[in-house]
Length: 81
Image 1 (cartoon, helix red, strand yellow):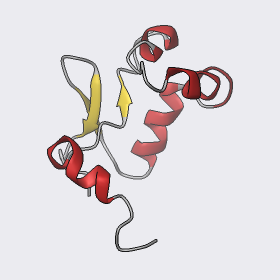
Image 2 (image 1 turned 180 degrees about the horizontal axis):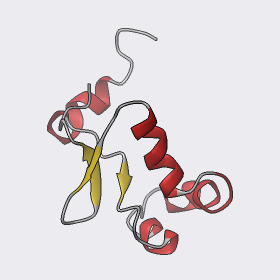
Image 3 (image 1 turned 90 degrees about the vertical axis):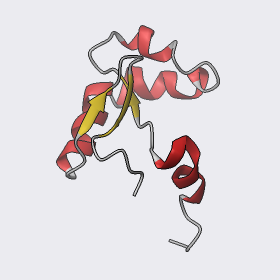
């Protein structure tokens, strides 16, 4: 990993990192919240890695997530670090 790795993530969103969208919603609804990347993540979220599995992946690594009113999910620390 280089010194600049993830630098864009650090500065975007005020230092927070939106990692998922409300995993309690159906996959189709989740995908509608990714208009620029919907095509790229459709297969991933429908065939290989469910949103719930993605949430569990973060939590298994000690990153607790929270869901905001608009459905975006962030680490509870509100810090991309």
